[in-house]
Length: 113
Image (cartoon, helix red, strand yellow):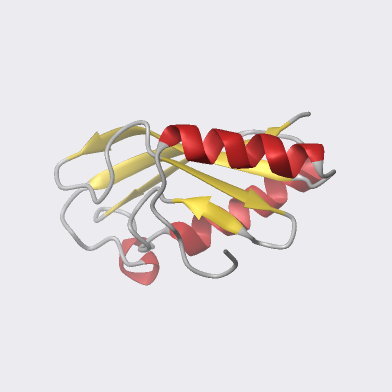
């Protein structure tokens, strides 16, 4: 599961997060909380990441996952949640690949066992 996102339903993502926590891994979850205009994934889409950057799920179909995974790593280290916003109005939109004309807000949090 390392590297590229894998589409999974909410039950699969949550079950895998539980399994990873039970194995003693650090885990962060990213959830799409708002979208405007064209967005690759709907509100409620989730991505889990562990400390080795294994991942399951998707918050964007791949275009912003790299930035979200990086923030997930920081959230696992400091325990602080983050609210991230990506869109074409952001100067970083093209660099993360969100050039579809929309924007997306993603909440990232460390999960606790």
